Length: 265
View 1 (cartoon, rainbow, N blue to C red):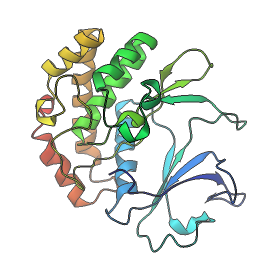
View 2 (cartoon, rainbow, N blue to C red):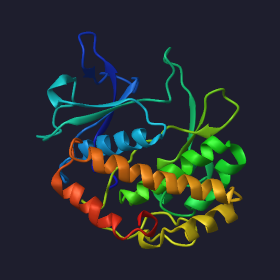
View 3 (cartoon, rainbow, N blue to C red):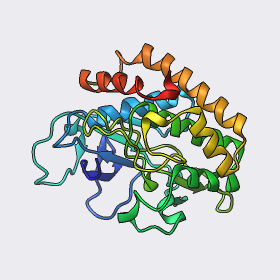
View 4 (tube, rainbow, N blue to C red):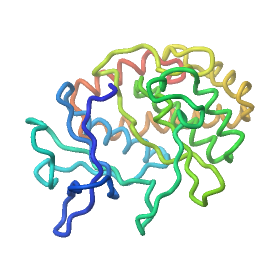
């Protein structure tokens, strides 16, 4: 899924809508355009991020916008179908100053081209357990479980970040890039090992207990959080899937995938 969307920084226009600055990368929103290869990627991400927020995860403001409401789109990007996704940036304060963010490729000193290698969910969990709070641990396990349930095979190192709101204490940054990738590129594995395996069909309570032990996280907290996440996912998926902007192929792919994930049973 890497590179399937064009992405721009945007600002709120004086007369409403969003506009892409003529110069620079300033702006309080990230705008993701529709993919030429895959149908409904912005809608997919909007739906999955909305579900994540309902379950209790830290999700920034986001909205689907019509392409003709976005000013200064670059000439030559070609015909695009569907809507764009606008996500409010969490690395900017209200006055425009920067908030320090480190993605986990930076944390581990890994070059971007190696973002699928040289680390695992377990190693990310070890850092969060050492540097963060129980709130961060819960948030991490929620996200890991959720992205496994939706079949997101692209949660690489750059899709996890630390944020330093007070410039000293690290916390898990808000969520981003939650997309069910299996409807577009079917895969039975995540890009990073959970603890011992990448396979979705081995994401079980035993695998999470192994992760907890190796990352020195409280086992009860990890398992209770995963169980709660599964229950809430089932609740909101069943009640909201018909109302979210998802094409039938995505809904069907998620439901087939859920049958293969042990923890979802």
